[in-house]
Image 1 (cartoon, rainbow, N blue to C red):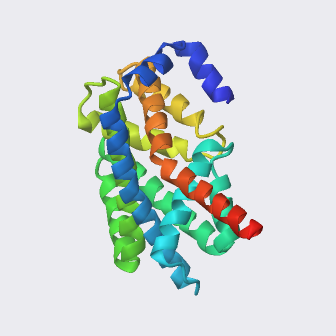
Image 2 (image 1 turned 90 degrees about the vertical axis):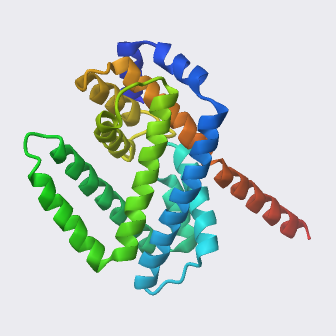
Length: 248
């Protein structure tokens, strides 16, 4: 929350108001559709990791559990309580390993893209080679992780265009990866804080303006939250079912 307060103090409330006004039904629909695919990829990754640990997690329940987890992560402090909820219901080791694998692939992909646009682009070849080796050894896990990360990037790009950013995709891609990596830091309040701070810093560094970065991050936050609402519906349905069974 401190990071978010600093961002508001630096850029003012304008970017946050602009973000809410800019969010459109088309952007929300796109975020819902894309997040459905990323959730499927993430659930598949969890299923494969769990199978390697001798735990059977059927795909359909995995998708439902992942949606619930994402909604809780997006609405509760820390950004990991949804994963804790998933771990309690389905076992801690598969959930922890699945999250570590997903974050590792995201870190490597971010590093590779940043190196590609840095003064040392040749170093990106080494990162790409490492990712290729991992893909050969764990094809389903790495492929699902890359697809899920790509989906989050696409939602960020939708947010950028919705916020009125006219920067090229080549400019936005490294910014998106940096912001999404910061968003994964479990030091936020209901998903807000590090993401907006990183966006303001990254966009300012790219010459696009801190206020523009904050606006894009807030639009992304709104899109990401709405995209997890199926998880809220599943949680509510589960609670209602338990209540009916308890009274029966």
